[in-house]
View 1 (cartoon, one colour):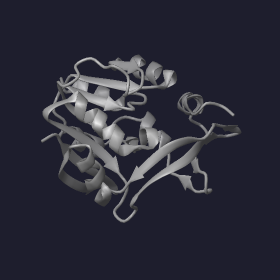
View 2 (tube, one colour):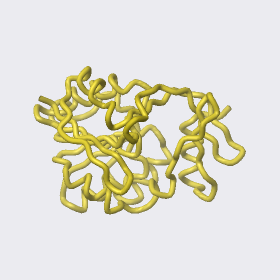
View 3 (cartoon, one colour):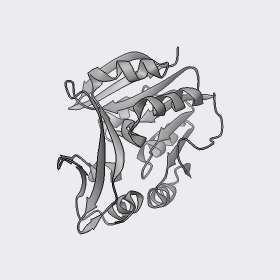
View 4 (cartoon, one colour):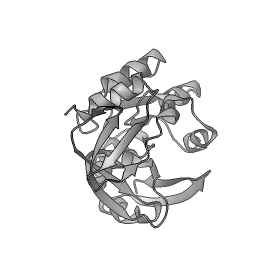
Length: 210
């Protein structure tokens, strides 16, 4: 087996083949590689309109959100474990760090917003732990902008693997949270739900540190 981070990196650098996220029960989950590698969309731009700097982009991938914020004059820092993603982001001039969101980060307690877009609420398979970590990094009144699943999908932690052509990763934990199920993990992490909305079929929530 190959480490998941390496399969993800291979998919970023050779995007001709689909990246499949397969759960242990056989389901195929959506991995929108073309969108991750492309420029920000109008939907992305409308989410970024809500971001208050400085902004921390968690699981930033190739850095399209960090770059878009920088173009607006907003200080933004991306964090990602994938060296392949970090290389792509830096080629675009994005300010990024190759590390886990749970490692030490500069400016703890001073960040204005944190982004959990492209389904990154799933990182680590424990949304409450992830949101608690972000709450500790944000300042009072700081905000989390999270992209979530559609209503009715509930909340679940899955064992998944990545598949890119013949290359298959090892299994790891991933979480999915529906937009109407974010209230409980947000509350457990000490965050309030400020808003929820749908934009061109994508679902989002705006969380805030009280």
